Image (cartoon, rainbow, N blue to C red; front, side, top):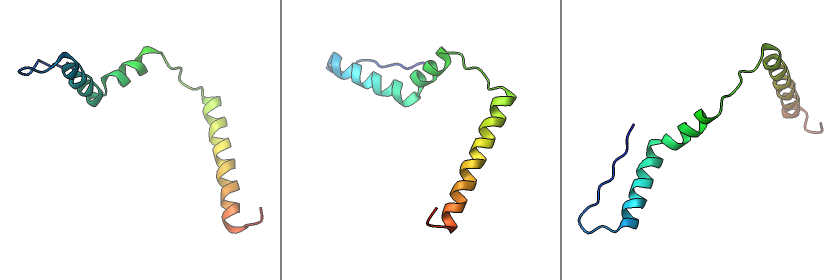
Length: 71
């Protein structure tokens, strides 16, 4: 994924730089490179299960709030 910006007529260097910057942002290249810069560990099965249980607790609690307003 390459981005090119060539000077148009008597376009200033600042305008050229801003146009190039916008093109790079539209491609999402910097965001992708930042994510790839650091290796992310995959969560273990134990950690995944703990998070799922915690999520279920929160959901149950919120379901109760829908029906009982004084909780």
